[in-house]
Structure formats: C-alpha cells, structure tokens
Length: 307
Length: 261
Image 1 (cartoon, each protein chain N blue to C red):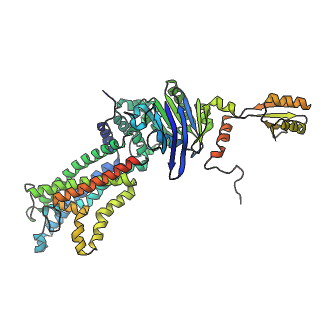
Image 2 (tube, rainbow over the protein chains, first blue to last red):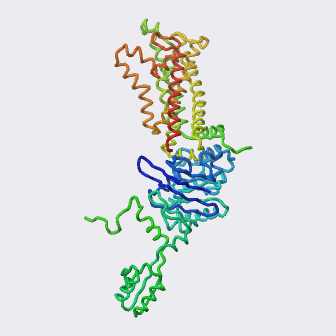
C-alpha cells in the first residue's frame, strides 16, 4: 500500500503539492487525475525519493523509498519513457538495472519478451519511437516483479492497440493483488482503466472514490420538453431549481430530480412531451471539479482571434 | 542469500553503464591516441632537431616530461570522461531511472567513482608507461634518455597516471555540482588552461608565490624527475591535488544528496 501523508512540496515559493493526503490500496487500479501542472508528477517523484518533500511524507508499506533494501523488487515505476541514455541498447539498460538490485539477468529477456520489444533489444534506445520507449519503461518497471507499480501518463504515445494492451495489463496486475497507481490528465482514459480515482488540482486533493461514486454524486440535469415552456420554467424556479433554455425548445433543469420535475409540471397543468434525466459523464464531472484549478487554460473554442 | 542491495551490485551496474555508451569508450580511445601519438610525435621532433638545439636547452632537457608532453592535451579527454559519466545522466534524464533503482545516493556516487577511478587509473598507467617507453626508444642514440631504473623517473611516470586519474575525478565532481555537460567542460578547461594563461600576465612575484598551487602546475611537478626552485616537490604536489579532489568530491556529493534529482 502507498500512503501519501500530508504531503507538501514548494519550489522557490510556488506550491506544487499542497497538503495532499490519500492512500492507494492493493488489488485495484487507482487513477491519479488532474490537469497538466496539477502536481501529479511531483507527487510521483516524491514517492520515488527523487524529490524531497517540504512537509509530510510518502511511504510504501510504511517505509520511505530510500529505506527500501532492494527498491526495484518492491516498486516499479515508469515516470518518463525518454529518461534513458540514448546511446545505450535496451538490453544493456535493463541489465544494468537488474544487476544493481540483484535481479537475475534471465529476467531481462522475460520482460523484453513480455513487452514485445525483444526484437529491438540490441538497438540503441535513441532510435526508439515514443511507443517503443514506453514499452521499455514498462519492461524496466516490471524487472523486479514489484508489488507496487507507478505509471506517469503511460498511454502517451501508444497506438490504440497498445492502449488496449496496457489497460488489460493494468487490470491483470491489480488482479494479482498489486498496487497499481496510474496518472493521467485524461478522464475518459481513466474511466476505462481505473477502479478508484483520485482527483487533484493545483496540488490539492479535490475528490476521491470509485468511478461509479464520482458520477453518482455529480449533479445531473433533467431535460424537459413541455406544452407551455414559460409556465413550467416559472414553476420550477419557484421550487428552487436552476432552469436554462436548451436547444430544441427543451429546458435543462438542475437541482431537482426527474420525478420532482414531472410532479411540478403536473401541478402547474403543463403537458410534458419528454422528460429525460441526464447523467453527467465522468468527463464532465472532471471538468467541473478541476475547472478552477487549471493552471494553463486556453480560451473557449471559437474565441480564436481572427484578423 | 539476501537480496539487499550492496555497493558491489551498484558498482557492477555502473560498470555495465560505463562501457555500454560510446562517449566513455571514445573518450578512452582519444585519450590513448593523444597521449601516445602526440608524445611520440613530439619526441621525434625533438630528436630530429637535436643538432640545432642550443646548449642551454640541451642542459635543461628533461626526457621524461618531453616524452609525456601529450598529456597536456590528453588531460582534457580524461576530464571529459569524468564529466560525462554523471552529466549524461542529467541531460538524458536517466538519473531518475538510476535513482529509482539505487535510492541511496551515497552508494550510487561511490559506485560511480569506483568504476571511474579503477578504469581510468589502469588506462592512464598503461598509456603513460607505454608513451614513456616509446619516447625513450625514439630518443635513443641521439638524445639523452631516462631509465625507469631511476627512482625519480619511475615516480614521474607513475604519478603522471595518478595525475590524470585525479583530473577525471575533478571532472566528475564538477559534474555533480553543475550537472550540465557544456558548463562543466568549460569550467574544467578554464581551470587547466585559462587560469595558467591569466597567471602569465600577473607580476612575477605573484607568479612565484601562487602559480605552483595551480592543478596544472601540480601535475607538472608530479611528472617531472627534477625539482625546480619554485616547486612544491612531487609528493607535496600530489597531496595538495588530492586535497583539491577530496574537497570537490565532498561538495559534489553533498549537493547531489540534498538537491532534487
């Protein structure tokens, strides 16, 4: 189990991680979500002992990373696929890692085979595509057969086939009882991959829970089309709902359930033609949650300045 | 058997890394060619002009330093090997992969320095003795030669290899401190080449008092069988250079441990 305990990291005045607090449990895939610059990579670097925490700590089964006796046998990590000396071959890269942690070198061939890069293992890493580098990074993470695995934006650069492969792979790792912690800035990706989700923005924890919980707690809207739109809108507002005019003459109601909307329409004597509860997608929940904490936001589409 | 990581494991790992990239292999080749090739060439030039050499120059002629003259150039190759052994980890980002595998930074840096010192001391001593012997063979019959049977001559050739090895450690330590290859190499060249040139413009009383403490001058003392008047002497020079190396290394290691990777 991975424990993030009141973790804070400041870089010359700017706060990258702000009192972050959560656990990552074994046996499930936990997604670590946040916009770019929200502190995901910093948190992962602190877990691996690469960066020093300003306050608080990150532990693996209660131990600091630096206290692990043979780190690669306990934690496997893929932070940056290109973080390999470009002039070295994949095999030599993995051999050096294996030897440093007393892992037998036959394991190098196993992980090369498993990740599908055995045929290019004796080529220099500098010539690898991003997808191949990603696979090499995964091979390195698996080398010590660790029970905790961290992946920072692992689907970047993978083709659709590779993405499907990696999803299955995360599931199988979790099924074996390992702790699998995967960061992404793409909610749609995490919705397909993760069981548990931790959302951060500007270094702070925004929410955490299962994928189902997150969509359930989100405020859905009710779309309603009725004979007298204005009368219904007035009646709904009286009940405390927020009413917006959607396209095709429907009203988009938030703050009331679809049952309550139907009853209000009945009481107001308005005939309802259509009544549809609209469940928020995970993507919308995420956008909603992190809207305030996006560090580098673009302007809305269409606002592109023309001459 | 325990699977706990030990210094020996990390040393083996760093040895694989050292010999599996072209920069270190090429560095060693360049180092070899410069020392031996230039040394041989300079010795041959001296021999072919011996008849026209002035009497004074003949009297002060040092067959040891002359045969090893290629070291003046080769020392930069050896410094670059030390610099790149650590800065290439930072420029490629592989330092993060390395530190995830070896989280104890003192252990990592120790393993690297063991690999660096052992490989460079072997190469340096081989190349220095070979260059010395080639030089004496070139001189033979025309120019006075030196023999390894003389204690001071043996010491000079031996310490030439030690000087080069210590320079590579200085390069490595600069790499730990500065992390950028180009900046480190510039600093290294400044120390060994630019600072002595600046000294040449200073008043001669300053030169006499301070120049002997420059690393390049310490090297000169270490690999010359003679002890000029304004000189620390070979063994004192070695001790002082060692002190420089230890200070640079300790500063580098401390910064490496404290900073974020």
